[in-house]
Amino acid sequence: MPELPEVEVTRRRIEPLLVGRRIRKVHTTEPSYLFITPPNQLRRSLSGRTVGALARRGKYLIAVLDDGSRFVVHRGMTGQLFSESAVSPRLMSSTARSALSPEAQQRFRPDAHTHLRICFEDAGPEVLLRDVRKFGKLMWLRAGEEHPRLDRLGIDALEIGGEVLFAAGRKRKTAIKNLLLDQSVLAGMGNIYADEALFLTGVRPTRAAGRVTRRECDRLAQTIRQVLGRSIETGGASIRDYVTPDGSDGGYQFERWVYARKGEPCGQCGETIRRIVLGQRGTHYCPSCQK
DNA sequence: ATTCCAACCTGATAGC
DNA sequence: TGCTATCAGGTTGGAA
Image (cartoon, rainbow, N blue to C red; front, side):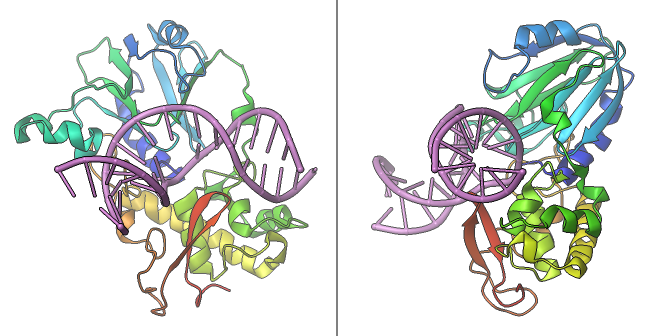
């Protein structure tokens, strides 16, 4: 679910719900693929701490705690981070929803997919993490501790320039789309925005990275920054599971040109949008606009 | 060094 | 209605 814009919007909006608050207690589910730091250790490490700041690196959210340790969250494909008071149909499964009265649907109830509940000393709302597929990652790092997942990240996609992109693509045979999704090159890029940026630059996703010219890299980098920035402005893309911390939807799904538009006419030329699989990811493009 | 691809997990939906 | 196949916004790690 969450690519850079969704993570950044979440960071900005959940920051006031975390920073300066002292954690009283943390509830978790049982150990699973989701927990890099075992849940019992996570509960122990977070309890009693006050959140000092909330940062973002690529698709990772990093809460810096008052003892210098860090709580790191990656939301994978379906991770949702939100306030106890959030209201959204996306926060429960459709089967669960259909069994409830309309009034009951308005109130979020922690379910089996709610893997983290952070309760605070003050009377304010809890902060929750829900992740149906458990592709997300939660870890706690002591002060100064490093981790390869963070160390491997390349330049933040909001800061990308044409020269870096061009340099990364030299002598690479892989498709330009795959290069854009490589987090060690461009931290934060994800499937939607890779497809959208390539469409707006007129470059076909299958083109070998080494065959993208310097000039195209300049335009591609600029387009990437624009697309990501615009999505942040609209609150991110709510195509499936993504909601902002208060439960409201983002708006970027209404602005996309090609992503999940297979079979629809291209908004620029009318040609039919195609879907192929590239690097195991659904990839969408206009065969006429993208060379 | 680079590229490919199975695996992690659950739910929604399209098609028959 | 029900069953089956396909699809989903991500990342890792190991094989080729």
